[in-house]
Length: 155
Image 1 (cartoon, rainbow, N blue to C red):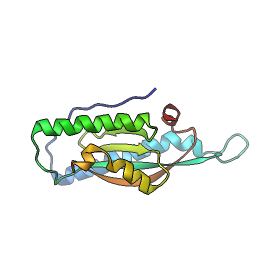
Image 2 (cartoon, rainbow, N blue to C red):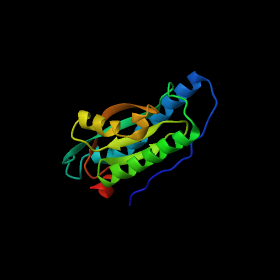
Image 3 (spheres, one colour):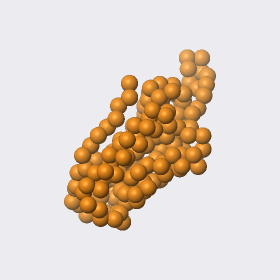
Image 4 (cartoon, rainbow, N blue to C red):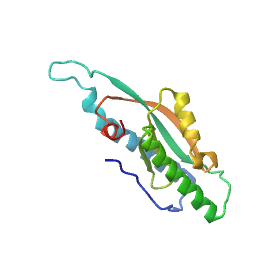
């Protein structure tokens, strides 16, 4: 079963340093949760054998661009609808394993791609990234096949 998360934009007023600290905390928390979810896949089986196959995905941090252009709300809403449609398209095509927003802005994609360059190309097609609303930071992320439960819904 595939789930898509929708969250209305929420404005939170806070100091820039506090916002940066919160972003780092949330990023660390999400990575930690993903790693805990996959720890059993890295452990040995009953016979002491390592996992049969390690899979590489690409962790895409979607960062709200602090220098984004001020746009009319109708245009922002249009970009957001196109962004959500793109998420649906990537999931249907098997490129997107997981997507969701962070509470205070930005979000995450976990992409299935053959290379960093392909992951960058996939991410660059997103309307919110094209419009300069979001910036990206992409890293390879490894897990054992079958442990990341979302992979069974998109294969």
